[in-house]
Image: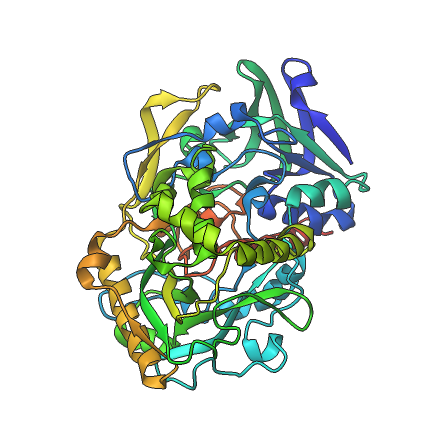
Length: 548
């Protein structure tokens, strides 16, 4: 494999490949990784550098009138490895219901043109690529001696599920370490694709227009072209190129995963928490954590969107908890806002709005031995363990916790991005105008799910959960998990989607979109495992098409 810096190529250089893949994150690298053993000539195109650069990240800024998504230049990055360089490694497959049409209650949206059953063999391969080894997503499968039901069997709440965390995998390392020995793979970096050129008669993509520096041009062409960028940048490129948008579908149905920590959960026996509130290692050495959901039949009956729930530590910002570790955590989060990074921007800033910082310092001073012991534990599991401890957790001596939720949004045609008519980046590409919100209908839906969660938990006697009020759910800020779904969705007809079941753009015989933006619905699970799965499926399709 060779790395080619586009800035060092002559003006108007032209490169070719049998398969051209734009993007080196989880999707693009997976397609290349699967195809590389066939010997086919692969040209990977990366807009950014081998490392992070402010110059490239500046191209990701957007016109954000909406406050429901984080600042896009902070939540994304343009570099080798793409989104995986910011990925925490959490994985969970989409549920079967996530792929289906939903018409119950107030829901009314289309499902995927493929089913969970269709994707199952690719999910199995994706778990290996994501570093989580297998599809053991229940506690009984993954945790030795774990009870099948966390809090007793419930007709409302399924407590068997677990999240699985990868090391996490930086797919930029996969490119350099695994694909480096392949003579049929080249990586063109510092190559900002600004236009996709389509033959008006055949629909074929004839070339990609690229700038290595503002005003320095080159082109790339290939027999098969795969755009494997994030959903937002994929939509932006297609809109700027006027490709694939014959039915005004590009940029629409934009969904995210609203998240939050709500309500008050009090354990009946604070000492009987088991693995309910923290991470544990599975029998095969993978970090796992309990994921609660309402049973599928409950969601069908009630017309509910998908939500995942976890028992979460008490509110750290209020020093009345008296916990030295929670106060330490709150103070660290406060300091992170000074770095200007992702955690210090947007709605994440509210996590650092401390009540009485002096009281937090006193809590820490009173509990220095426990803070020191935690530091040793953190060094061992977070810093030194190759399988990084995913995040901070804390047992409560009082048995007091909150519920953390990861929620699905209903896809809506009016949730969209368009090209800004005011702002352009340094390469002359219009920035995105983001028109996204979390509507009242979704918020009411989340509240009903939390009510049923409380009913189910309280009936078991394991704990008592007081959910938030409807008023709180209608008005509270909900932090965006920065996932970019919809936008160039998969469907059964061009009138309602951008790509078909094989991720091929309807109006082109050789343009494919391997991106979270192709998700028809978002479910509640993070998208990385699923985008790896559909990328493996796409690679198999391309191999068959090319006769490899």
